Length: 243
Image (cartoon, one colour):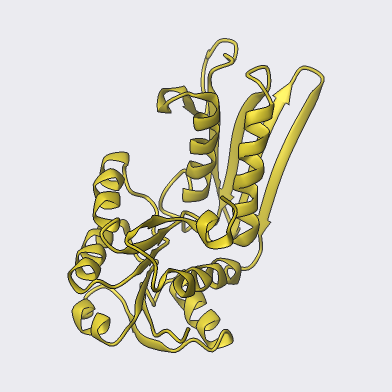
């Protein structure tokens, strides 16, 4: 199906990668906008919104898309839990793919993490380590947050189990905590490792991204997929048929 894209956040690193991927995939861009541009006018010339801008812009993007019943692909991260809950309700009024990571490899990592967490019991300590470039504004990354959600779901734990780094006299590690560690430096596009460590063995699942284009190509694949779908919030697992 031929679609015309609206790319919001076009001046950012991901916005530029999306424009490059659109050229590579021969997908027409009806508008490429950023903060301060006319979102409503851009929507009128486009079939689907691809938004990689800022958390503060997400509500306005969704409200405009709902008003015009346009599908949305959201890759913006950094929302609080309460913000995301309200935004998800709004996003569900149109066909929306919302993912913290659009890489095909990372989405396979999500599936493998779920399987590992379901097989390995609480005697396997779960820790997530992520590293990104020095310019990233939120932590943990959206990808790491999803990995943590998967582990918590499989172990029937809630967010109180999370340990965001450790400092001081913390005592022995308990079997019901899940560690998360965010590293920042240089120009790292995105590294994620999920570790399950027991006495005598350790399993590590790692994905390393070296080219931001993998996320852009995945997001545009999602944009092609979501047009014509029923209203609701989907993720890349849906797009790739991994569910």
